Length: 200
Image (cartoon, rainbow, N blue to C red; front, side, top):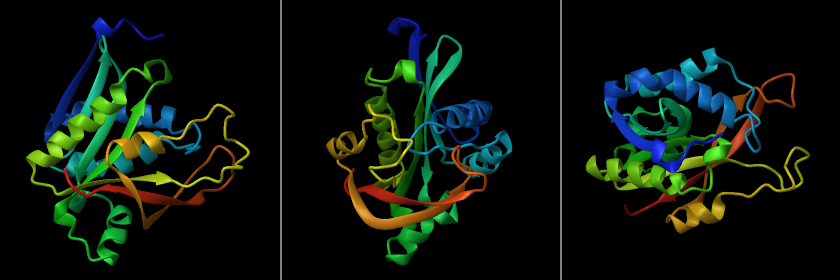
């Protein structure tokens, strides 16, 4: 159960400062991305491999929501030039300079803390950091799921309207990634569409 708002605080860190929080990031990703629409059934080893790009980037950025001493939310980003090639490839194919783009990795927030404005705060902090680096665009990707997907909850609400209000628009650029899902015995290939904000 979430504590009072007075017990919750948002902190930020960059570069080597993120290292103490990598395990917390892994745990939150494993918890939150197990939900629809990602349906991710990953392992801690998977997470360590994924987060290695952040650990190695001098300009990686974390915004963390703490409830007391517990990390209950995390939002990540790093320059696209430091991101995994799977995320870089669509921009390279479209002739867009990676140096201009700051990649917004993910925002993971435990369910008790949603609907309190932390999502906006996560975007604010990452965009502010991207501007400080001289980035001209921010981008993230979101998995594509059919409206009729059998595991889609009846009360599911997409974040698309929220993203659009933040100035992001979907593009035709697609990343393809495979991961183990809760509804499959073998890893599943998924398509993720990029959302981009052109002016920070």
